[in-house]
Length: 272
Figure 1: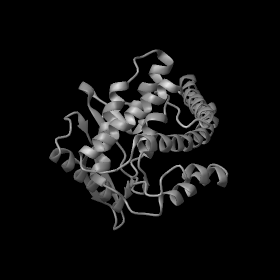
Figure 2: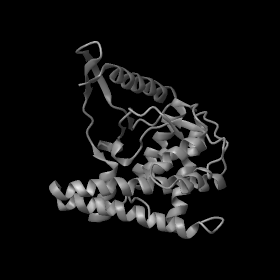
Figure 3: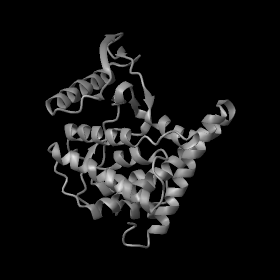
């Protein structure tokens, strides 16, 4: 049960994006949910029927790696990064408020205004805006034979280029918060940008700028993640299992360690 307009927007997004994937010869293991029918209830509400997608969340794979010694899901995240480039190439550049104003307002909800302004200033004034995907690892499923399913198309607001990339890579403790891990983050980010440009999205950014922007956006996501996980942990104490609490702790520790790495690296010109 959902507002009819939301269901129609979601269905149109999935169908339009699927056409783009087919036209641009996307890898066959990239998959989307399958809308079946929108059944109107009233003029404003409807039942939105969709075929269930099966698989394991990428976030769960990261936690299994961290807590149970399972293999690190590198290749699956590499595939998701490539898939994300297809989404942003399809949705294209977005117009909106100047990127620094947009991010100062977003950052300012989580930290003091002076720090928010300083982080926002790390983004060039002409930094591209794209449609937000909300690309955290819980919005991707890994199915049989390496099939990657992209989920959740509700977000439509503009956001800075790379915010979704940072969210995908660093919302879970996939990569270590050290110099080697930093290089790996930048390499994954550069591959995303290469895929994006190969699909016709000319971004015109260089690696030095990418590094600075990633650090600012990662700081924002870590602060946001710490606040969110604090609330989740407080609720989980009353009803969730020990394994769930350990997963929350793993994410919280990741945010703190990454923030500490970024803080220690801030007085250098480059952390690489």
